[in-house]
Image 1 (tube, helix red, strand yellow):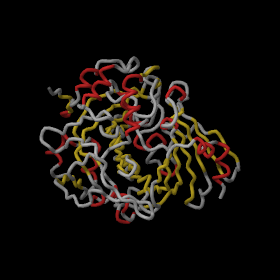
Image 2: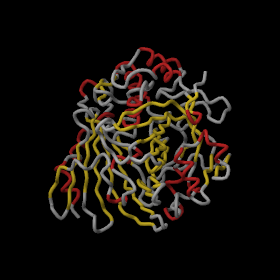
Image 3: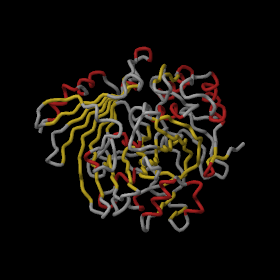
Image 4: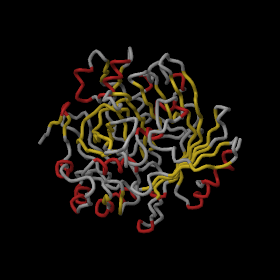
Length: 456
């Protein structure tokens, strides 16, 4: 059975058909959700296990791809031998419009010579069995309260493998598995409308996820799902600055906490502005704090509507992008097409519109969540005048050695004023490190620790 939405959006999941009419604030886990996981129809992470009808999306086989880790810690591209099966340009994109987001089409139209090299689809997202075990438990216990702003009863895995509304899907994106303790150093580049390139920030980033303390117990989880610490090392004018944030599963009472250390003041200050649509100064106005990973933070300013599922061309399996020298990656108006791999994947489509009385520079957003990772791989934003304003792309790192697959680098393109930003770039800085959760490591993720780690 197919239901057609505007722009040929196809609902491909029976789970969505069953839940589309449920309200965002009253959703509860149901026994049939766990049954769907156990039946084998869905993967242990909630994706459709089968391929698509024409074979361009294969079945998920649950095998982690073979990835080698170099002496510098960089991960190899397990699909380096693949050749493009299709190339899409502005000249032929109309024939592929059903599989292209609005933002991707706008970018193809705007950037001369831009193309999408579409490779065979590889469903590389595989996660540890312990994560799958918690996903199954969450399917029978997780629920939303406070109009979708609070997750109750979830721990150790995505909370809603069979989503019934947009807030559940976005919570899956936020709480998707990205490791337990993750650290890396990454660069941020701003490319002006005229094509000038600037390294605006080098950031030493560490992330710890109490939600994924797999040695802990769900009933003892206190609602704090992630802590992030960022130490800025370049450019010299900003070196020594440090940020720390805490995210919670209760956006109703605790949207986000943030602290900032400035070397000139030699003190740590509470900073509620490290959230929402506060501009990221190092992104030159091209991205805000809630644009990280295409969307991050509290949902209290938006109503999230689940529009269904589509087959879409998205960036995917981008280890090759992350191992190239940055000079081979950055183009004048977009990423070098030769550095970027696109594939056809099924994505959940979530549309975010402002709640009554709330504001954000992005009056509407559309997020495309990969069904195999639940992470946003594309995003479009509209300004208050209803114009398509920005389009974002997130690039998936495959770490078969863990195993996991997660977006890391991302880009935002201003479709109106021009210019773009490429963030989370590890091309010149080394590798991503993953470690098991350790309570002792929390000592380094406190406001008091910022001053010692942030001094030049």
